[in-house]
Length: 286
Image 1 (cartoon, rainbow, N blue to C red):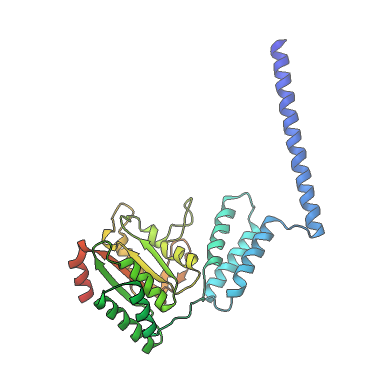
Image 2: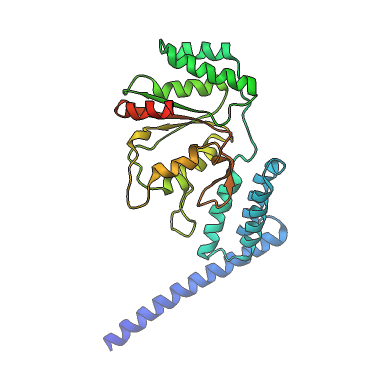
């Protein structure tokens, strides 16, 4: 009899709990339906689709056609997926990255050599040979009307101003500045991005850079490049070739985005420490 009473009380408690949750769920769904009918609220998928369309609309004229095609296809796919499915969250995150990137948005460059020299002198004392080389790059950019594809290699012991002079160059050119260190980097996915099928997948550092700075032509400082690692996940040094070569990075393919991005408008400062000075000199001479 005691066992029967306990079983009866447990069953009653479970039934009350389930009926309460069902009642709450039913009322919530009815409330959503009423609000939707009155136009006070939209469902999650409609709200997300509207947000993504609103985000891409100002960039539509500047955005490459193949990017717009992928965004439209993914938006149509999002409407067909259930909000509870895993594919829904993957598609939502993918659209979030695609619509957040600054397609066709460039900062206006300033090739005023006198102003650049003044900024460099304000930020750093000495370094005459380094400043002259930087001013030569800016002067050539003024003649060509663009400074795309320029890569400057800086080497020296810690604390001599390699990183800070990169920030000064960005200020002189009126470009956004982004720095990322590749010291100890052993995974190619950090540069080329992860496949979207993996849990927690993210784009590579360059795509993250574009989202952070909000322009498609930032000045990027690749720090501690001589400390690149090499592990079971590939050789990041080889992946950097596609990133830095102006002939290849015009069609850079990130594994996460799976669409080509034009990185040729960016300027790169590649920094080495003094331990790789011989290698650095050999590369710059070559």
